[in-house]
Length: 180
Length: 272
Image 1 (tube, helix red, strand yellow):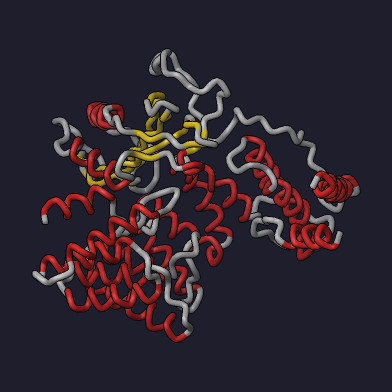
Image 2 (cartoon, rainbow over the protein chains, first blue to last red):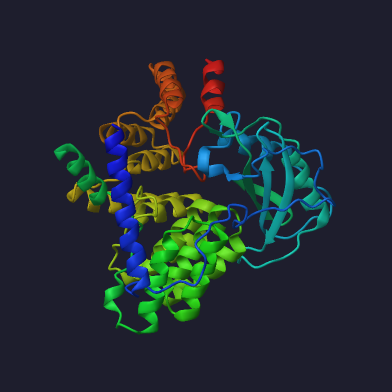
């Protein structure tokens, strides 16, 4: 068995060498970008902001925050149940709200199933930036913060931190649907 | 020794590769060739890493008309809820190669944003470009004509949806490639039109295509109870069992059309 691993390692090194040689000789374009990979920099990262985030929101010491779809971070009863609860909470909008489009709320579900680091993206129906009325955004954020039954995904049996987002379809100031 | 050689050979044969362009179609030394070769390297990097994004930017700088780079760069933004950036990038890919990227944009508008009008417009335009053969959805589950039918249904035009379902299923039936969930979705559409016999017939066809699916039993039970026929409880209990075993509509990113939840099933069972 040990021989098998050595053999596969050698095969891997040979393949890697072939690729490196191809790059070096110009069969592939040479990249002058260093090939190290820093896991801390990802599309969609939310950096800690003391002005709006809880200082006592605990994350795993590794600092790695996964995406919900990597390992099935979900809600008790599944996504249809999460949708049902949000729609029930967002039945009657506050007075004076208007506007239509997409309101996306992105946040972190930590390894304990708690949530924080909420951020919003507000778009009109043509995917262009716009600002909804602040009471409407606050109302939707409150409904998201109030959700208590998160089930963080697991890796090797250990729960992990992950990003999650809900997109709300807004029609003339009311929440028409939640996309999950 | 022979065993190791076979393992090595198989591991070489089945190395996971992304859909890669053939860079040799571009003239040696041309910006397209350089962009294409750099794009291949970008695909090796983890999706969404800043480094991969830098690579795609370099590809675009080398060749601003290299549509694949705009598309691939857009994907992590879509999956992580930044629809503003995704839309800008995918629009550019569609502008450059509409016949190739309209399918992807339409599918994603449907799936991630339930933008039925936008998705239907993209699929309709693609049908015009492809002689009514608009290919499959990104996950391979749906003929895009089935998606068009689902868009029509969600926009409220159930009759038009049914016509679209019928045409697509009839076409695919001749080639023995009816989709995994086509009959289920058409059945649910008939259920909404109160055509209960038609819906039950579709659910029966669905079982022949894909025998273990909680949703088929769930919607069958709804009809049987509504019609005061026997078997509703047995079907719902079967739906519960299948759901718990994982035989259900499930997608890592978003809910699927006509997907059900365990509380939906339990509410029905409590009412019995």
